[in-house]
Length: 140
Image (tube, rainbow, N blue to C red; front, side):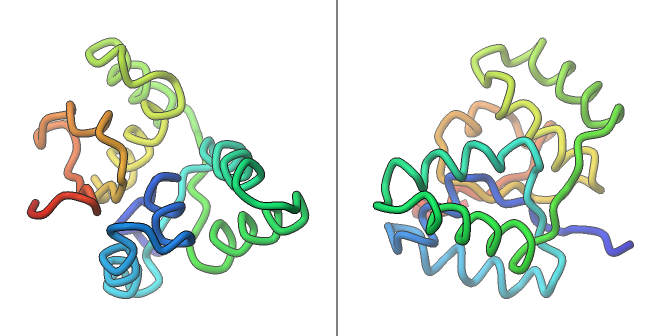
């Protein structure tokens, strides 16, 4: 099994799909990952829901969700290791919430993959906990 080098959060995928500020950076990071890009399984409903809110068709939202989570990236499952790590992260950074703590823990548990996001909530995590790229930031 290939090791992922980057884990993409829902926020980065939405930036990419809707070509918002930071889309070019997400595209470049996906290309640099060279097939070693991941997506947290816990984020799938979040992505689908966000797309449903922005698109006219649930079928389109499902198609796009499947495209990103099966063809563009590799789905990273939640197992006991990730769950325990998420609990540790959440105990220290309660404002993250459950889904974000699972996303962060997935990156940490998968060879400390770099988290790619456009969500300022993650910026509260120090580099010792999580290496990250905010695609909307002017520098990292």
